[in-house]
Length: 583
Image (cartoon, rainbow, N blue to C red; front, top):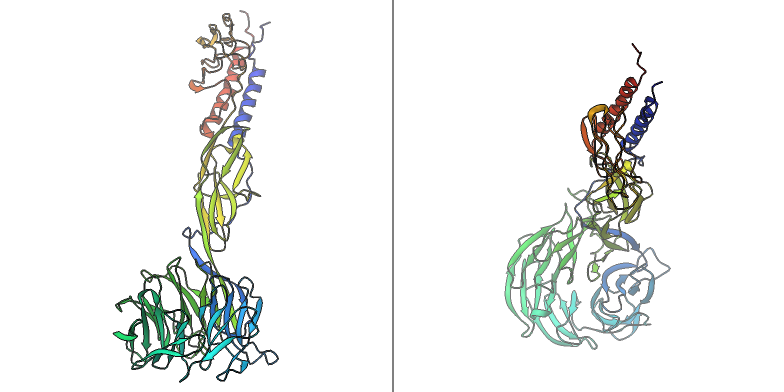
């Protein structure tokens, strides 16, 4: 009876089949969750404003002011005809966070000093600590703070006041009575000095440069008044037209004068030189502007004409935001539904830094709170990783945005051509146990809020089989000489020192190395196989064994081909091992 070789057809077939199963496992990816929607990305850090609340607790708002110290929202209000049971006129004080009415100061002195219910038309300046200086029709200058039972006030002599602003000296305000500009005392309303112009409507004060800019819409010009001398020092022509003036305001940072004129905003520098013109959508007219010293941006409120029979009129207004240095828009215009100019002009107040903006709508008797939001901006992407199967992998990504962006991890099995969401992974760090099937996959984090989506750069994962070598650090013995197939055993790899092996059997070379070395077969199909760390020639090709089967980035096709070759080799050995007929 011919003895069976250790690698008989039965064992060879089983070993080949086992290897084929391992290779097939390495080639098959583990299941991934269903594909998520591929939302369109926007430029990272894109800024937008959105309406988050509407306040209807302050009657018909005519002007707004955020107190710089108390942070309260002061509202100059008139009564609404539809609220006959409640008089909402006066100085209303709101909580800017939720619009809760803190108090209403509705009583103020008349021309004879008698207290009465008074509407407030314009907020002039904040008082130290809390409170406001305000103008109330027809000629009243009042002061009050949150919680006061009544306002203090006095009436300016002469004609009705058409506009007012903070004075250039302590305890004073400036008032326009048609074309007459006067400086008056706040407490007594006594006129200290005045200047009469050819015509005029409104004005703005440039305190830093000691100037007052007085607009004369009828004559389409603007006068510069020296605040110290209280005399006109320059005249600037405005664009020709027949429309109405919306506002005159000075940017405190640059001294530029912004004039709302017809359906545009004309901007001049501190010397009166024309810088540029802004235009709204359709028939929208500019009716209010506020400047933020932190961001150096201007916030302009546009109101529709309110006549839908006119081309371009849609009854909707808008808020636009511009850089003051070059007048460029920095955010997409925010639509203000139903905001038109039929029942009065809007007002705007900006929180320092521009995080929150308040816009009044006298038509709807409401104040809209808008908050700034920014699309996600990636500040950290996950890094490529190379691990062994069974190791824990931790990927981390970070992004900033307002509101805080949500995160979802995604995986790609086709080198980033398509991506699928990793189910349940919604934190900045994604940790999992690496499997052979994860080799070559790419991972990324997707950050999103209502403004937009941003995605990190992908991280590639390399997974190899863990080295199963055990034993000491000595050198293995020399492999014996094989007879069948003509090969020799290779030098054994690391492990405990082994003895020199004997000559291989007739069917092939024996395994080289010492005990403790992973069981790598001897010569198969003309190749050599050594112990750990050697090279094994399988079917004529050389592959680094490393003591155990390793995933080294070979294509799945080549791995599967190796399995087929090993299977074929087993059958060849089986054919050679058949008993021969003695002749």
